[in-house]
Amino acid sequence: MMKYIRKSLALSNIIAKKMATNDPQQLELLKDRLKTRFGVPVGMHMTGIPLGISMILAIFCYAMPQVSLWMIIFNWLSMPEYKVLVGVFFAAAVYCVLIMTTMLLTARGSLSGLKSHLFFIMLTGAIAILYFISAFFSLLFGSVDNYTPQITSLLGLIFFLLNVKWINSSLFYRSIALSLHNRVWRKQLKIEARHAQMLKR
Image (cartoon, rainbow, N blue to C red; front, top):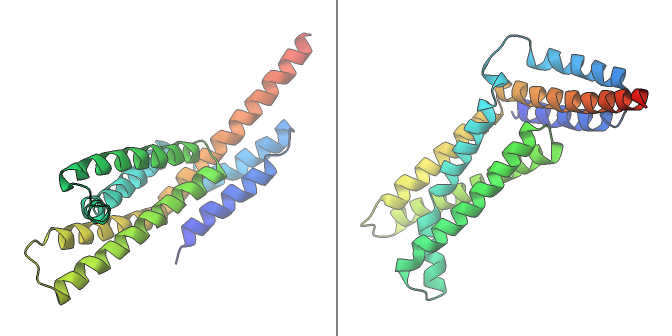
């Protein structure tokens, strides 16, 4: 079911281990292997757009339950409700920094970056699912004057499912293969630059 997510993680894990070498020829073989994964023709996977779309979907999914969640927290702490937007703003700023950091690390071919990116998506999705269940339970078993929680919870769930479908696509997998290729290439260039400096001495 999660074929391409598993393939992305497996490929990143293999490349992380095989990059331990300092042999430029071995690195060249790794690059050739990765070229077969992302393909030669220019496409969307060559632009970084797949990771950007995943990040945007994660942010939209995260944003949906925020007002309701912070209303609950502020009521529990007996804090004035008019300050809810302060909590929403700071939490959103922190989340955006975290998800953007994982996206940039993934774009640089980092295995821990990819794992963190997937972790944040799944954590956000778990919150979206809980929010959806809570909103529709209140609709079924209580009197509801405002349907905003039901609408936003449904939207959050849709954004999460779209994101899972997106990161489990061949296009996203090919973009991961390209980012790994570029990481291997950067290491190869550094080694060659060091060798060139040693020859000059």
